Image 1 (cartoon, rainbow, N blue to C red):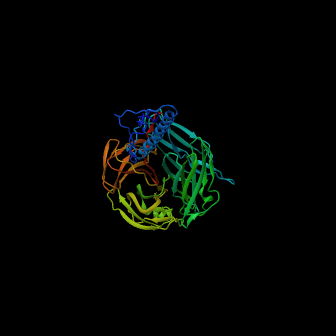
Image 2: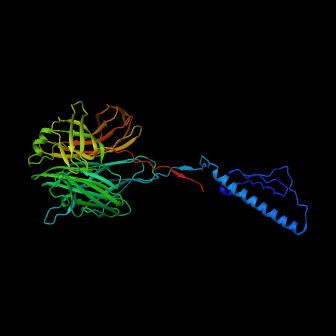
Length: 511
């Protein structure tokens, strides 16, 4: 019932006192005075002018008594406690339609043309695997690189399927860029952290920013290195037009930096950010990698897969130019104002022996922590810190004829009971794919395309997988997962990402 519908009972009106009637007692504060119901009003016996005066006086007395009653009633109303429960308002919960979901695949391998005026160009085309029902692919061909660009894989809202996943691989073999790179395709975001690469002699790193939105994006970059935060012109206000790809040479912002970390912050449109890095040792191209981003610094990170293959040969071939950036290492940064105490646990996934170590990160300074005591094998990495940090792992593989380097980024958690769809990137016939699973909290039973795999608490396992396919995963406990790809002198990786968050229900209140 609304306030306008409320019914207020009329207050009783007391009789006017007469000359021979007793004067009523003063009302008790807070009480509503009332007249006796069995007493009829008495009229005066006189008449004429006196009668009229007496009647007038009686009317005045009546008015005064009524006014007093009204004031007392008001005081009484003020003292009545308010209702203790709010009225129940009907509402309806409405689940909005699923919006279009899109993933951005980074695109081709990048390099420079030869000649007096080298230009940024595509040097090897990407290959892609998309998984889902009713997917639509489109290409972003506006790029800073000649023949560059990206592919957008979209699950329209009207598509019959619910899942979406995509990954890509690229195999380059030019005099300047050689190696295998792979990456999961990314949902555009406003914040990304890229951990990897270098800008020292023979090392090339490109920050690739792709805007698949309908509005322009403005991007700011923050950089850290081995000596602390790096200041450089051109790091703020970078415009990435709608439907375009910008490629920023990291060497133009951080000259001769062995250990860069880049934060990407976007306003306006969202962007998909990756870092492409390649190495030339002397005159020999020696590795290619696409680094995918972390969302935010955190106190725990899990790198689900870190293969160590041909360690002794890697040591020999990756140090011929005096560099150490082919050796297994963790790159870590505490970007806040406090130092971070870090514990690193390497979990053997193939029955081997793991390793645990500790380190202190100086706030704002990037640390490349070498891990040189690992035997060849498959490992997962659990990094625990008392302050939020970012981290990635680097490792390499080699043969007598080739060497390749890869950066492995931490994998987000896959929650228990949630089915996850992932894409395994295409490979040549000589290539192989491996699924890595780590359960840092408790033992997990992971179903991979109908096959149940047991993962011990705090441990990890590897599961061989066909390339160029889709996989469905579900687990009884939280796990982290990634894929690694390998061939003769080739190494790459991609992550298994959780499904996009469903839209929250809207609560509607009728008018």
